[in-house]
Length: 280
Ligand SMILES: C[S@@+](CC[C@H](N)C(=O)[O-])C[C@H]1O[C@@H](n2cnc3c(N)ncnc32)[C@H](O)[C@@H]1O
Image 1 (cartoon, rainbow, N blue to C red):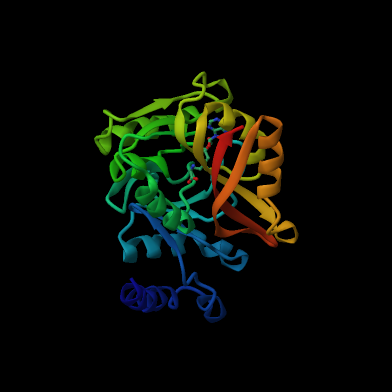
Image 2: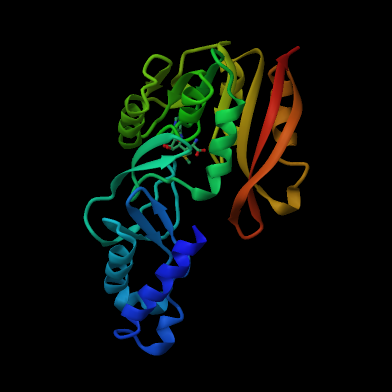
């Protein structure tokens, strides 16, 4: 809420301007991300010597129990590995769009920039269709489909640590009757020709999983295909790669929709395509 940040920033400045050199006060973060009662703070290099005290002041003013320093998300499990600056407990329950997400903000990515997509998925799912979420995380995209859309969901998550939160979230949101979780690599999932809808909420290497998605899909299905794309290849990509692979496996593809989720890196965009696939 803008009114809130407008009151908060002067209070933070007032406290820290008594402790920091004047030129550094202007470099204090003006934006931050709050997930549950944990804060993610982007902190410039120059503020390094004061980072713990800065984090403590933000925590006190904003009323959070832990502060993490924003860093890069990386690796197969998309782990955050953010530096802990204040507090010791980074497990929290975040409420968004009527969904409760329990997660460890220090380890599991939960991007505020993806909120529109989480809300969109809540509206797109239909009661009783079967959704397979191949990269479930803590249920980021599929919990809204089960809770608001009434869909049946099979959620697959490879990381054992993230999986624990996924299971807890299914219970917290009371969708045990229609959501089942598997702690496996989605390539080892045995279901074939079962899904009305498939979520491929992953980046960088999502194209490697297209054949598996097609084997899980019914003869006619919808696939929400996320990937990261260099700007110079847009708008041809990522549709071209998906279509090429799908044709090799005997499927036709029709693009229903294309959205940019966020900037992933300089000149690289995270996009999602809604694709209708059908077996020839
Ligand atoms: C970046 S998170 C995205 C969560 C959610 N789908 C979204 O788009 O907001 C991707 C998740 O996929 C999991 N993952 C990566 N490779 C996987 C695989 N082969 N099988 C199942 N899960 C996988 C990661 O551990 C991570 O939790």
